[in-house]
Image (tube, rainbow, N blue to C red; front, side, top):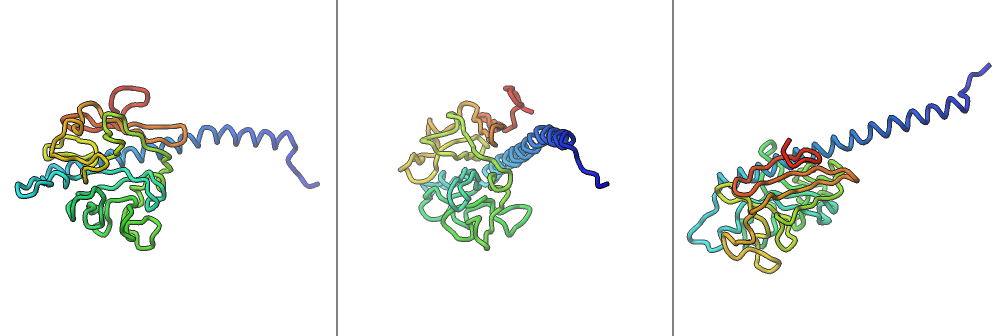
Length: 231
C-alpha cells in the first residue's frame, strides 16, 4: 500500500516551518543590517583618513575648502533609488557639489573601482550600466536590502545628507558646492561644524542600527541596540 502524509502530519510540518522561519529570517535580516553598518562605519573612518592625509588648503584658491573629502548619501536613479553612498573630493571645475568619475576615491583594494554605489552624470557610474566601475557593496539597498537612511538634525544642513572632515579629522556637515541649496561660503561656518553627536540610522524593514559620529574628534562607532553607548 502506498504511504502518504496524513492531514495532521502536514499541519505539523507547516507549523514547524513557520516557527523556524520566524526565528531564522530575523537573524538573517539582522546579520545583513550589521554587515551594512560595519561597512559604512569603516568607510566613514576612511573618508576621515583621506581628509587628514590630503589637506586641501591652498592660499591661491578661495574655494579650496570645497574640495575636502566627503561621504555623500545618494538616492538617484543611477543608484537604483538608493540608499547608497559615494566618497569623493570635489576637485575639478567650479566645485558644484556633484562628483564626476575622476573625483571619486579609488578602492584601495581594487584600483579599477571607484568608491560609489551609483552616481549620476557619467555612464560608468550608473549601477545599471554594463561598464559600471563603482562598488555595488556601497549600494546598501542592492547589497544588503537597506530600505532607508536617516541622519539626525545635528548632522544635516538644509536637508543635505553629507559628512566631510577637515585636516584635523573634525566632522562637518552640509553641502560644499555652490551656495545655492545651502552650500558653504567659507571654510568654517557656525552651522556646518558638527557640535553634537551625529547619528546615522540604517533601516531594514522594521529593524534598524545606528552609527554615531562624535563632534571635534570625529570618532565614530556603532551604538548598542537600545543603548546610548558604543559596541
